[in-house]
Length: 49
Image (spheres, rainbow, N blue to C red):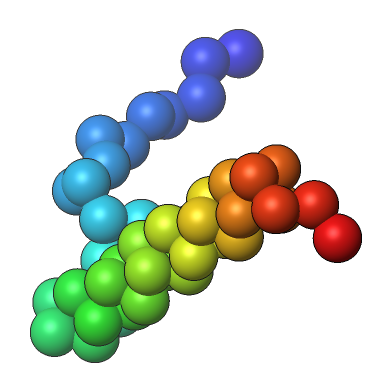
């Protein structure tokens, strides 16, 4: 049985039904959090406690 595939808009929050404005804010927050996580992980490697 084949399942229908829907092409992504490129922003998961738009795909989940958020308004484009709200989706842009949520995507920006998600990007900042991902960058912060990477920064913290690299800082721990450079300066172990």
